[in-house]
Length: 237
Image (cartoon, rainbow, N blue to C red):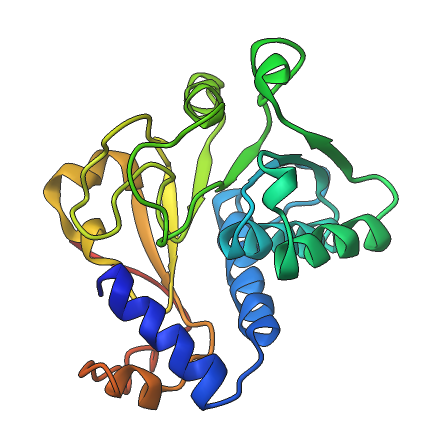
């Protein structure tokens, strides 16, 4: 599914079908948290998890997932990469994370922290920097942050698609996250099928977030029965 098709499906679900975007975000967060738990051997208790949080809905999904992981016993750090753009639902999720747990550490990432005190060594990194609406090479301090994440040696779970990957072509016009696994939401984005994307995505998981099949049907895609055997499935390419 192309980025434009996915945007239209999101619009149909949230506007025409009046499903609150917040409901879809919570469903996405649960699936991200479940994928993270699976990557950590079935338990996150006592595990150090760092979330790289962008300013859009991808960052909101990731922050909401951190809240769930905190509830399951994980030790959390949320690195806000675009605090001035973390608004709407994404900003609300940061507030909820702070209210829901007393021991989550929330920090703002900027040029100096990427080069200095920022540490990304942990049991698992969640990449929630850029979503399917991002275009072109990552900008500002994101390339340096992406390189720091890749150099940390920590396993990385990318949310929806690795930051820096073009959702339609699978190309990387600039810095790109090298994920150990990717949990893509609702349907795989077209770029994830490109052979050139395989090295960046790692294991590819597909998560149901509750978008009705009728919303996909409006775009000519039949998803009935797709999740009949489970709502978080591995995609073979």
